Image 1 (cartoon, rainbow, N blue to C red):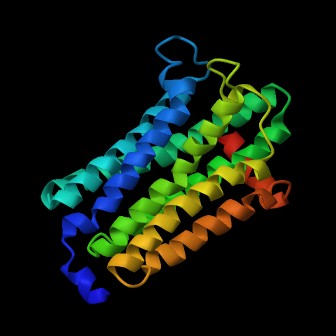
Image 2 (image 1 turned 120 degrees about the vertical axis):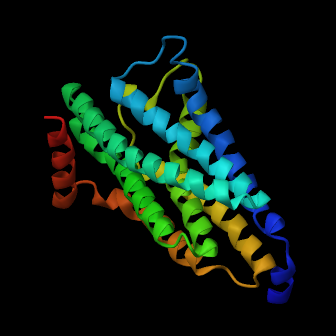
Image 3 (image 1 turned 90 degrees about the vertical axis):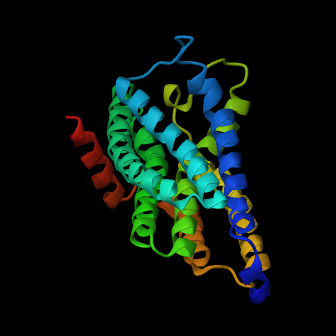
Length: 258
């Protein structure tokens, strides 16, 4: 099996990343199309300016991920590495903008008298952001080891893509109310939000594990370690809500914007 993997063309081995990146784009369009991409040009989006900055940056990431997957599959590594510098800048901006957006949303929920529910649901976006930062950092450290680098970048993208899948579920539930978005209502219980994230974990991790077994004979340790981390965080992060530690984190986020 390993010998067969060694003879497998790099383009074929990298094709799965193109397919998964394309699937991520579909998730983004289905999840954020009705509540943001269509709402903004029609003047139906309600929210502060930081949400537009946050939205632009986070929408740019899956597009860049797809572009990088295509370049790697075609062997255009010089351009791939050049775009990698853009990726580092984009990821850094995403972390700062994501943190600012969380702070703004917490202030809004407090002003509306639902601050405790806002603190609870914030655990989802905050842990997504932390996971994203950790996986991107690890991928940069491992940039010379392509087998680790590309898998860690996939995990980084997965860590924020659950939001699009959760938004798809919301869109279906809110279908009778055009242009509704989660931030305008009472935040749901974070224990319920873990379901679409775990579904995405099962779909993508299952696909890449099967792919690795076919071409390598064994699942790469990046998927074993990183995948286990994703699933563990997605399945247990709601337990942080209500703890003194989580209140301290949300207090710090609130203090960021005074």
